[in-house]
Each structure stands twice: as C-alpha cells, then as structure tokens.
Length: 251
Ligand code: PEP
Image (cartoon, rainbow, N blue to C red; front, side, top):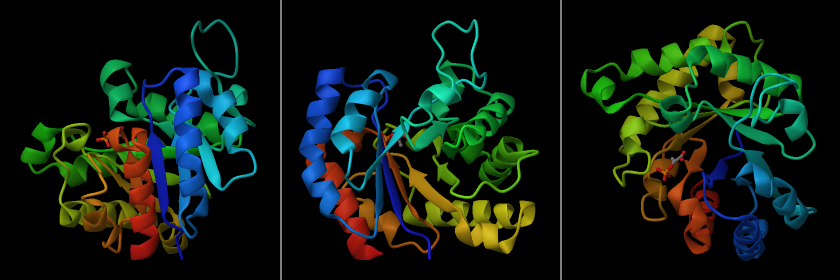
C-alpha cells in the first residue's frame, strides 16, 4: 500500500523568521495526523531553521530545487551535497522553474540523477500547458516529460511524481478529480512500461494545482491519486492541516 503524501511548496514566500513561525503554528496539528506522510518545502535560506523546529517530529523537509553540479563556479546555485543531510526531498522540474529559469527535460534529468546520487528523494513535477491540454496533447506531453526525466536512471525507490497541469497552478482553477485520476493512471502505466509493475505499484503520484481544503476530497477519493503537492494553501496553517486531515480520513 502506498502511504499518501502531502507536500507544501512554499515557493518564494516567507523570511526565515516567518518560516519558523509558520512551521511552529502548523506543527502541533500536522504531527498528530497518522498514515499520511507530510512535508514542507520552504525557501533554501530557511531550511536549517525549519529543520531545527521539525527535529523529532513526523513532518519531513524538502527543498524546491537544486543544481546538478557538485560544486564550483556556479554563483548563486545550491548543489545536491549541500542539501543532503539538511532535507529528505527535493522538488525538481516545477513548471515555474521550467518557465522562468530555463529548466528543460535535459536539465531535469541531470537534476534527478544528481539528487539521487546525493541520497535525496526527488519530487518530479510534470504537466501540460493550457494550449497543450486544449489540443488534446496532455498524455503525449506528460509521458514525454516523464520518459526524458527518467532516461538512463534505474527505478528510484522512494521516488515521487507530481502531476501538475500548468493551467491549474496558482489559478484557482483545479483539474477535476476525474482528469487528475485519468492522467495519473496514464503516468503510472508509463512507469510500468519503463520499469515494472512493482515500480508502478510503488511510485507515489500526487496531484498539484489549486488544491484547497474545499476540493481535497475530490482528489483524494480517486484511486490513482496518492496525495497532493500544495502551493498557496500550504501557507495557511488551518487550510494545510485540513488537507492533511481529510486525506488521512479518506484514505
Ligand atoms: C505548486 O506550486 O506546485 C502548486 C500546485 O501551487 P498551487 O497549489 O498554488 O496551485
């Protein structure tokens, strides 16, 4: 059985002080919820401080990105060994990074390899843009992104995929549960083709895109959906806790 996973992507929000206050506010509630894996992904500069607050609790920590080189003259970048030991997860290939910071299928592949090499668990984000969706290309786009991201990589145990339709991220216009379930089912079948049936049974595939407390049940009641990557709503303690609690109740 796959343990459901809810991860909060704080994006470029919170100073260090705000991040610590936010996680302190969420933690008592989150920590009591069983049978759901929970993680928060604050900005790089807050990872250490948030890690201290999370010490000894059931809430995991993730980063939002990394660079694939180990060290060197790459001003402003953060390498896998810098994150290893600091956090367990790392989001890779988020559509905002693909859109604003030139992440490509090729660099996403390198980042996944680098993350795994450092013992980090990638949360790989894939998803189609609005025009691709409207052109009926969702399946083609997400399976293409998945195959490129995993090319040459043996099945990574502990690997997480987030299906995030770009048109649903931060727009308040989520996919329907049925759309999410169908596309995640296709992604799972592709994992089976690429690796094995066991890999497909093992891999957790989340939905992301305008998930809120109000629509959590719509997604979590679907058999293929293993959890959610939550952006905006993960910055609101009551809302995030409600998403996690509802997930525990439904699954
Ligand atoms: C995200 O950042 O991955 C995301 C899904 O954002 P939001 O929940 O705000 O749409």
